[in-house]
Length: 254
Ligand SMILES: Cc1cc2nc3c(=O)[nH]c(=O)nc-3n(C[C@H](O)[C@H](O)[C@H](O)COP(=O)(O)O)c2cc1C
Image 1 (tube, rainbow, N blue to C red):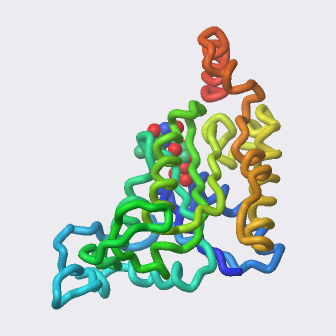
Image 2: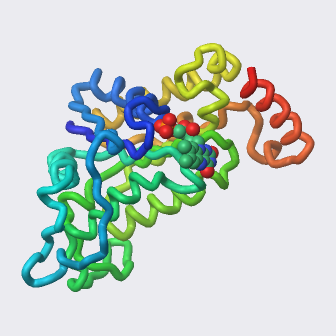
């Protein structure tokens, strides 16, 4: 089993996204998977210019940047992998700009004039299946703990899966990064002991990816649980919100 993680954090390998990927990789490598992280921030990724050279008779499926940046080499790694983890911090309520810029380069691998209907019944065009349709896990992390913060990236990855016929093997959302010290502040972690269960569940997700090629719903539930042990419906009540806010400010400023 070969797993490639595409990390869209602008902090690259130094960030929380990588910390979470590494937890998954720990479980996967212990079970024989070969894992590789690609922190996009470390690579040269040009943005698609929409020049349509890749759709012209002379340049069909050839991006003008093919030999000039690192995207073709990263696509090759995706092709060679059994599954991909697309990982991103939430930046202004969505996936990071860097990951989006990378994913927009899929355009240069598709013949957009060749229309089809996807397996999920949507109108779309030809895509390069060996790159675009690779089975994937979405990993999203954020500081804010409101569900709304992660709603857009979740919808994004579900659409991604449906339009590209890319099987979605698991949706992982880890919220409250700052509160729990972004995997770096052990004292902050101690204030939210549930985070250790989340870390364990991330490792278990890696085990399941290596052994059965997907993450079970029960493990996803464990990973995605709130680190503050309050049910979501109470979490939305204003007096409780005020208390959480007070506590959060104390912890943040500690
Ligand atoms: C430019 C920028 C925008 C951000 N926007 C949000 C946001 O909209 N919601 C949120 O909860 N966190 C937001 N964050 C916080 C990050 O999602 C969070 O700290 C994440 O754990 C960072 O991961 P990283 O260390 O791998 O970059 C933002 C951070 C940055 C740098």
